[in-house]
Image 1: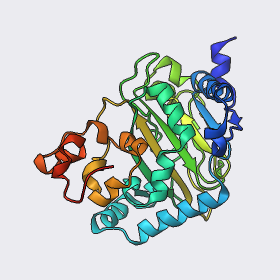
Image 2: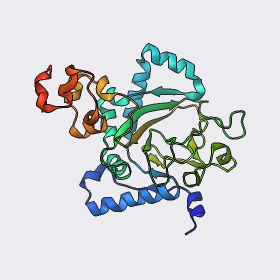
Image 3: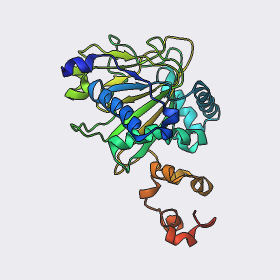
Image 4: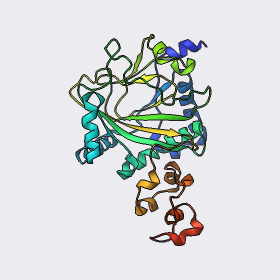
Length: 299
C-alpha cells in the first residue's frame, strides 16, 4: 500500500468501549490497540469516539471555569498577557481536583501509552485550554502563518516516541470553532515547518467527548474560533519514565493528598523515582523508613 496515500487519507474515528476497558478480554483489547497503532503510524492522528460521556465533559468544563474564577494572582496576570487569541490555560490539573486525577489514570489511555512509551511511563503535564470566541491560531495566509504550529517533541527519532499527547474535547469541534489542523505526512518525513507549510493542511473535526491521540512528530495546530462560544479541551501529555516531568507533582501535593493516591497514580505522578529534598521527605519513597512519616505509617 502506498505510504503517501495512507498519510493523506482522513483520520478514523474509532469506536472503542473505553468505559468498559478493564472488563474486555485481552484479545479484544489487543485488536483495539492495534487499530490505534495503525492510525498513529499511517495518518499520525486518531480520534477515539466517546472517550468521555456528555455529563463528564460538562463536569470538566465546570471545574475548569471554577479554576478560572478562582485564579491566583500570577494566573490572572498570565491570562491578561496571553490575550484573547491565545486563550486561557489552567495548569497542573492533577493537584486541583480528584476528577482530573481520574482522567489522568484512565485505563485505556494508560495502557496505550505504556504500550508505546514503556512500563515506567509517567505523566509529563495535564492542563486545560479554553479558546474564547475570536481566539485561536490564525489561518494560513495571514500575517503570522507560523503561529501555533508545533510537534509534541523536539528530538525526532525514527521509530521511537519520547512522549505522546492525548486531547479530550469537551464540546463538538469543527472548522468553525477551532478544530485541530495538521499537515499530512509530516510525522514520517521530519521536514521543517517552513517546508511543511508549503503543503495543504487538513482538519480533524471531533464530537464532544472524543479523545484525539497524536503521533508526536506530526506538525499540527489549533485553528480560529469563529463562533460565540468557548472551545474547552483537556490536554494530557505522557512521556517515557526517564524524562523530566513538567511539574514536581509530589512536591505540590500535601501529605494527606499523597496518602490517598493509588499505586497507579503514584507511578504516573513520578513518586517512584523522585529524589527527596531532605530527610523530612525520605518516608515518601522508602517504606522501611516510615518512622519519618509525620502522619503515620504508609499503607
